[in-house]
Image (cartoon, rainbow, N blue to C red; front, side):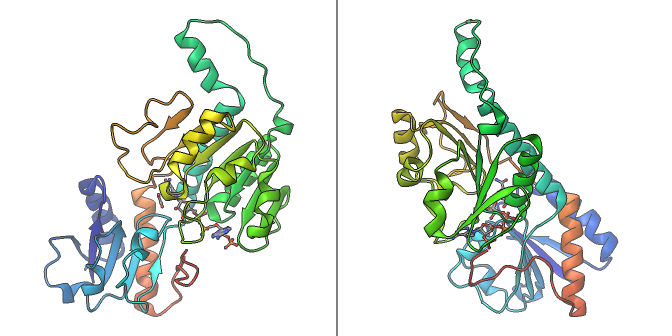
Length: 313
Ligand code: NAP
Ligand code: GLV
């Protein structure tokens, strides 16, 4: 079994060492290679990919399975020459979902408890009390009610926030107000004090965080984007912050990563920037998922967490 790690895998030596140690236990004969040192392309059975360079995966003639090292798969699907018969599996495991729950909960609480304002007041050495918004009226809206979004929704509800969610198809989740489809988007947005994006990046969701969307939120809302940078129209966020329609944003992903040094988001007093770390994953858990799916592939059992190429996620 020859497995190729390919793409922007960082730090590659840590990932290689962890994956090698874990894979060797489950598959003693595994030969783990790192692109571009892939040897004969005909050898490669499985690719472990994170933002793979375009055109390489289609040139591996005996590839049986592509596994995304993350939850998202748009970084693989963007290759126009990808053969449609090769299954693509993605990561879904509790450790990464918990990381996302922690990050989003932290960001919601920072906004609700006024930490953006207190940071400014601290700079001015001003001891000032700000009103605490009532949790029961601080509605959080989550775009995307999949593995991540639905878990985040339930945890925020358990803390006491009213939570609503929006998905492509109808959902019923106890305690959560569920909306779906473009015809219900405006209604969904109308009560969100905080809007959290946990959608996959597809042609239908690219640019969804735009001025029109922001204008449907109650004035002075907050944005948390933990999905992909291309969901956000960056200039529209700056306009909405200038007008006060959006009061603050917590951004973990960006159209260009790393975020360029000169980017206006860096110094903005109402924007929190983190370097795509909301749910960075756990290499040993990732290895367990890889082993499971490779074994399934070898024994002809159904793969887990397979991407629907028609939906794009
Ligand atoms: P998922 O399980 O595939 O769920 C996706 C959700 O989005 C589903 O509820 C789906 O609706 C909804 N959706 C898709 N297209 C839609 C559309 N056009 N209109 C309305 N709803 C739509 O994905 P996940 O595992 O929760 O992950 C979501 C995303 O989070 C990933 O794709 C990835 O980009 C991002 N992520 C980021 C990080 C990070 O570190 N920043 C870490 C992990 C994941 P249906 O349920 O109706 O299909
Ligand atoms: C991270 O961004 C992921 O998709 O897992």
